[in-house]
Length: 449
Image (cartoon, rainbow, N blue to C red):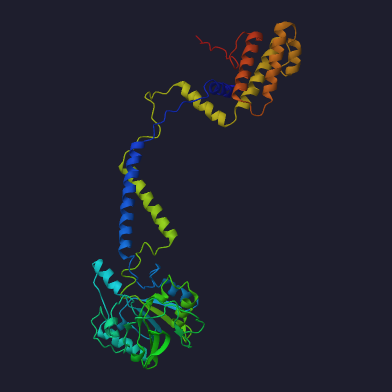
């Protein structure tokens, strides 16, 4: 009955256990962090160098969401319910599945590809021939000129400066020249399906189609320097020539006039379900965004966390760290450690309450036996019999204190020690047999002859 009380007395006497822990391996951790930081720094430095090498070029690509790209144009059409897709093959593979093809010529693409050590491709004669056949069958070709051209030159030479095509193409592009005077904010708009809802257009390029050399071109937008945008018919289809590619850049589609004009150019008169394709064969997927930049942000964060976890796992496997707890030098176990362990287990099971009540019950039984009273005598009756003289009064007060502590639901360690002290003192003073051990005495075994 009192074996649990003995264990709890053991924890009460030694309730603090000193744990020897190994110091944090600061040097090893600093090495791992420094190596990981070096890898991250080199990766960021390389990415920044690559981005700065192409940041000065306007790609005019539907993959590029930088200011010089056409990503906003593609997203605008898609949000308005127009089916869009990138066309990443040569124009020779063009077929009737595409209703509108947007081609943005850019000499910067050739420069960027050359700097990156990639081959500079271009349209061949077969590509131009297929483009004409496709337009004649009912397609719409939107041909945008690069504003980087500085000197007046024939449009066919301007449009195919990086290609192997002849100077005159089957599409019959009109000549283009740089106008000496042009009104960037005073463009005149010819009423048509392409200018419906458009009030103003903000243009930057000085390239124009001269009026005296554009008899077959129907103007869409023009100023005193010439035609900025015009169209002409080939068979059942049409060709739209626009001499300013900056009209539809991401940075300029925030303007209402430019955004409406971009939508009309691609979607005016388009049959439901028809596809608008952006030419990406010569740029965009070749020198535009990398696979890292086009990934969603949450995917990038997940990859960073996964890579960091793998690096830490490898570092933990390659670098030998010390144990979290230093083992004691003396590995021999003693009875004190056993008692302490059992005491901790009993403390977690709230055994202190049972131990205090067992001590109080044991003390009452021994006092009742010493005073000649029944074993079930209450503590109050025992205190009345003990009360007499200074010694008896102290014993009665101690017995009542023990009875009060035994009524606690969760006695503390100090109260447990106090209860054990009172029990031992009263039993030592009043037990008839003079034995103060906490527990019943067992008779000695006698050997038989």
